Length: 176
Image 1 (cartoon, rainbow, N blue to C red):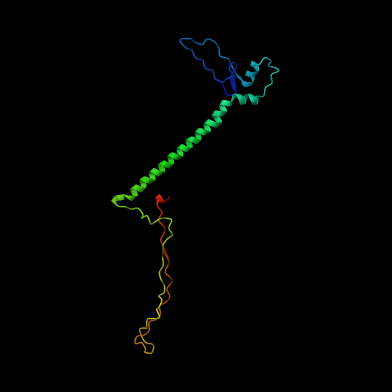
Image 2 (cartoon, rainbow, N blue to C red):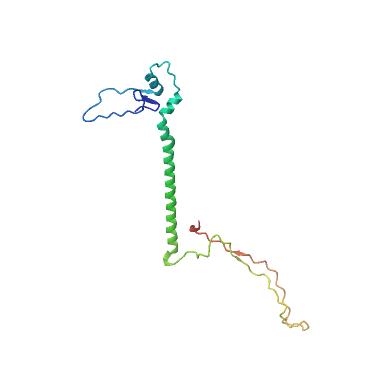
């Protein structure tokens, strides 16, 4: 195996496989590793006149490595990320389903929120009336011309308006 940017002179490949079969063995030397430019010049007939652009040689030589580095590795990363995200989503759904089942059947009683109640509903407002309307058709308790026997009741001091009570919506983990 030659380093990156170097090849064997005879095959112009960076790796060489020697296979011996049926008790045979390799008896010889392996050609040395040369740079791509040197290997191509040594294979040409006239090495002085042979002018080669190094960028073209490297592009042809590393074509198979570009495929691995630029296509296979990023594609494997993307596929791994997609499968990882799918696994996480399935795990979250499974946990939610278990949590919902355990909260609705806790101690044999149903503790789930009725279907009419939702966290998206507008908060309920409780209005307390501050004044009472008087019906004019009802006659007064005492006639106007007879004086009352009891002293008049002093008017009540004005009390501040009671606050408006609002109920906050319930938010459950299942609503998220």
